[in-house]
Length: 262
Image (cartoon, rainbow, N blue to C red; front, side):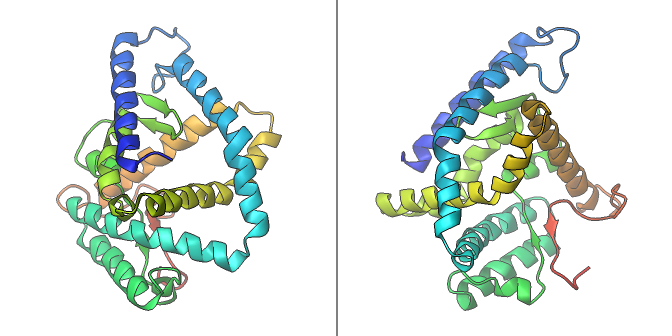
């Protein structure tokens, strides 16, 4: 597995190339093209490549991982990486002028790191401290950066110009990327990828069994969810929104609320 920083450079090159193609292509895909996906022919080609790679390698490995790894261990792995993400979420909440979420995520990270065996145990959720998952793409969107064209990035999957570029910054906010020992860093990255894919097995199997166009479903689901998250962030941010969500249930789509905290 390649160095994380080298991978981030590859992502940036793919994003930059796709952005240039997006500007050049305009509406060249025809009158029936989705306006959010002007690069659909190219994106579909990349999607097929990613899907083939997933079918041949990642999904079988994730399936085996789920079968042979006890559920408590898988839960601990997910908790560990979720805890690392809480620290970067806290930073982004601060950049978005969301002091409550910044404090909550920092508290989660501190509590789980100290009392939860470096995050393997999710003590913070037991204490009903909510998690708000945020990345630098959210931060850019909060301050008005447009999403740009939909992109399917090789190996990484659905994104857009803004979020793809922001992922370069997210890499530097990832504690795993700062691990000096190459073998340890690569093992942690590999485990995180496999564990994350294992969590999507049921949903992906249901999608495989359906008759719908998987590419369109994944694209629309990603774009709609991402826009809902950005809208929530803008609405709840200091100095911009009125604190009221446009969602019928009033729930922040980035926020995972533990039972009893709502």
